[in-house]
Amino acid sequence: MVLRNFQSGDNKLFVNLVNAAYRNLETLTTERVKRLLSPPYFEPKGFFIAEEKSKPLGCVGVFNLSAKDRVDLGYLAVKNAFSNAAVVDELIEAALNCATYEKRKTLKAVTLTIQPYVEAYQKFGFRPVRRILRISWDPVRTCERRQTNRKVEVTEVSEAELAEASQVFADGVQPYWDWWVKEKGGKKMLQNATADAMKQTPWLAARIGGKIAGVTGVIPRPRSSEASFSGVVVLPSFRMAGLGSALMSSALNMTKKMGYKRLVVHTMAYLDTLAPGAILYLKSGGKIEAEYLHLSRNSAE
Image (tube, rainbow, N blue to C red; front, side):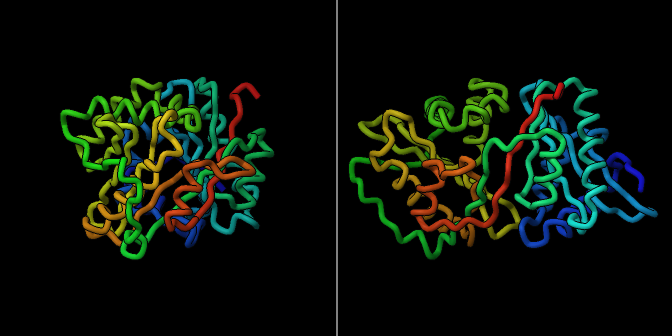
């Protein structure tokens, strides 16, 4: 077996490896692959492909984060991973060597909760820190839910409201998503990125007394039957007041009007319990499709 770096034209090989290894748990779309394999997130020297007699066996990538001292190890995918543990180990070791060479302080691994991958990462010193759930809705079936709190007004975010709405998003993800804010390079960088996203895709704002207290966004996917969902974000002082369910209902109705048959979100859960966001999504008719595990270690370990 040999390991090599990603080369021009390997896009299809990458997709085939992931789809074969994960089967029906996850399918890479052309749009997703384009984002994954674009700088500054992606560098060819940080992506490894295992081959035997020129036949691909597996892959793993070291992906850059906005926080310069952190990287993601992701898309560890090996054909017949249960019987190819040695290939899994060699790919992880190559990724670790790359991250250490780049002098990254914090290493995070993201994997579907598939036994050989989780056990291999733990063998290399990674510790589970949280779960991520992929939840989906059928908006045609679930958008009949009606907003019951008449004190909550939900409308689209206007251009004049971008600064206020993006600040609400950055403030509202705390404290549950503090780790994610750090990965995004800090609160200011997250707020700027959110404002840019709000210019490109439709976002909704929930207001109480004329002030924005919560936001959510529906992210279209060209040439797809499903849309992505930013999740519902509500300022801490306004939680438990019905804003979350109002935003969820409005997002489902917007998704239906846009013609999408599925709405998908990736949301955090603790290792042993659900976070409030996940509970809201499940109550609103969402279904868990897949579970991912975040594991972490310091590069010096």
